[in-house]
Length: 133
Image 1 (cartoon, rainbow, N blue to C red):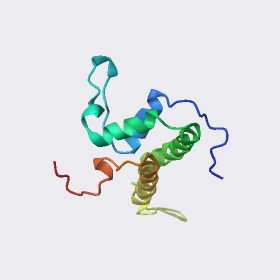
Image 2 (image 1 turned 90 degrees about the horizontal axis):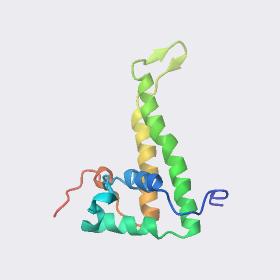
Image 3 (image 1 turned 120 degrees about the vertical axis):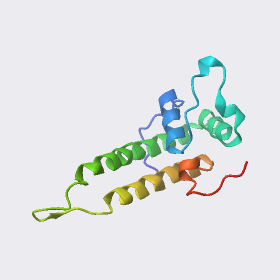
Image 4 (image 1 turned 135 degrees about the vertical axis):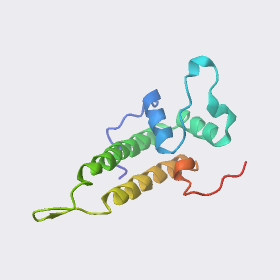
């Protein structure tokens, strides 16, 4: 079972598209009102935009499931900074790798979203690989 029951099959909102782009590691596209939709000029960004605009109902539900997983993972990374100043308190020991572990899990889900959409992750997900233009 995919876990998508009850999730909307309506087209993605602009906010959901922006979050999908962001989680896939792509920069902001800017306002469409100025007539310069930057994604048109880049093959991968254009492919991502085309896919986001042409998903089936079931695929829209799956994207929303990925987003619902990614939002709390992103917040958990930010929240992990609350414990960086304490290594040990009474019987509690801080996981020194908490931020790294949370980032690895967050990145894993981001890559899963990219794979589902059939796009390569943006620069942030490229693991420092050289990009030749």
